[in-house]
Amino acid sequence: MNGQPLTDQGPAATAPLRLGTRRSALAMAQSGMVAREVTRVTGRPVELVEITTYGDVSREALAQIGGTGVFVSALRDALLEGRIDFAVHSLKDLPTAAPEGLVLAAVPEREDVRDALVARDGLGLEELVEKLAQSGHTARIGTGSPRRMAQLNAWAAALGTAVETVPIRGNVDTRVGFVGSGELDAVVLATAGLNRLGRGAEITQHLDPALMVPAPGQGALAIECTAAATGLAAALGALDHAPTRVAVAAERALLGALEAGCSAPVAALATWRSGSELLLEGVVGTVDGATLLKMSASGPLVLDESAEQHAQALGRALAARLLDAGASTLMGERAR
Image (cartoon, rainbow, N blue to C red; front, side):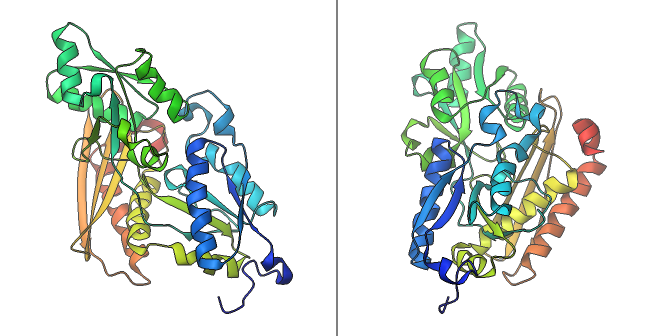
């Protein structure tokens, strides 16, 4: 940093940095983590500025109100209007199109990518389904994600059984509360979110990505600032984790090439093999699980300035294969 003003605004560089965040408990926990790290690397105090997004106040299904961007646009508006200096998002909430006037300053190291089951009686998924089937009942599993519904239904069909996937919304307390009240037998949430809230002990099973491929960018955070704030962007870059940034670039390129949002059952996970090869898995299916396309691609990658571009090319190539195999038909109009 060498004395360069972090916000490129001279004396303003001594003032607290304003971090924009959603008001949910999870968003506040994530932003608090980032705030502490920013203070550590910059020596600057950071204050949280709570911003309500449309996705936070609407009770409609995400697919009906515009998908991922509903949690992001208010924060981006605050950045562009100068009301905050930088923002923290769950990376899976970011639209794939690059925003004008903003930069992705950092992608910190990813948390656990897996989905997690929180079930009654401390049961795992297979135990839960079998126990209820023996008593003549179908397991009712709540999730707000078509991606999870598709893979849960496909898993059950492969075992010759069935589950009832129930669409839900709300914060972690609300979702887990459905299990405690007996309204649902289980819910599926992101492991990363539960861990960040200190609630990992409530997980009854981590769902292996072989069963449940996560959402593109799941477990990762995104730190955005304005393109004009070059000093701040450079400082925030100290929090960037290159292996994570490159992996999620591949996942998001696949998602962008499919032209899909959260309304489509799309999953993607990029993992490093021996630190020099990137393996990308992609899934597209129908919500009922009747059809599930699952493909993978891999390629050697060196973590240099061109790594992100190569990762994006890998994502687009896998998306093209999925489209050739019929993904556009499965996803309907959104993929055309």
